[in-house]
Amino acid sequence: MITGAAVYLIGSVLVTIAFNVPMNNALASAEPEMAGADALWQNYLRNWTYWNHVRTLASLISTALFIIGYASHGG
Image 1 (cartoon, one colour):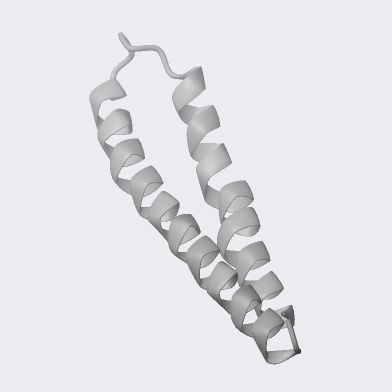
Image 2: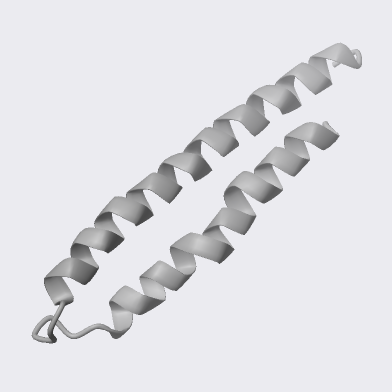
């Protein structure tokens, strides 16, 4: 159960705080007409998608760990 919680906190919550939110903020403050807007979007799309996959995988792994922990303790 502790491992499941750690995986969730690190892989989902901390990744969101450290990577996805700052990228969202940078994109929100960009103007479509500004120089480099296309490069910003391409970078955002690639990196945000990568970190979103990390969050998804961490959530799935933590769910599996919670199920295993619950089942192994008489659940």
